[in-house]
Image 1 (cartoon, rainbow, N blue to C red):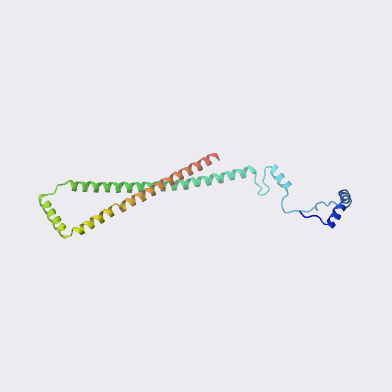
Image 2: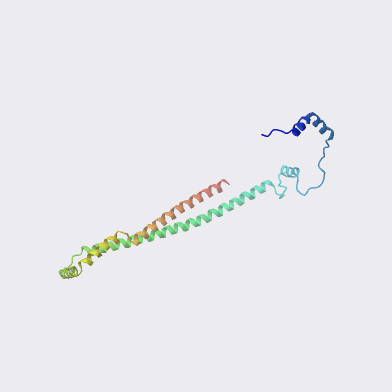
Length: 199
């Protein structure tokens, strides 16, 4: 902190609070507010309007204002419930469609597997066996190396999965997302109905 200068010390020593107060009492002149008309309603007008049950801004009774506000809230809530209900119906319809598609794909896949199993189980005739043996002998003799490389490639690519599995997993995630959204919408409808009942 800076030390005061001599000039500041003189002025500090010259200040006398008692003399300052006496000077104030001698020279004070209180000025009141000038009377006039104001365009904004005063607080007394507002209080007078509230005391007789009317809002001075609108001229309506306070009960009427509350009734109108409650009616407006009810209408907004009922509109929201209706819109959410229609969204929920659309979501549930879409969920049923996806489930039906998956069920039909499962049935088709099951039928294909059954047909393939029947074909495998059916024994070959003697002519078919002889034909297969001749073809395999020719192939083996011609290109053993090509067969090995093809077998290796087939084993490498078969482990990767098929597009139907990927499609199933994506539709499964889509279905779970839709179900979660439907649950959320049901919750919003329940909250809106509770608010409506409270009004």
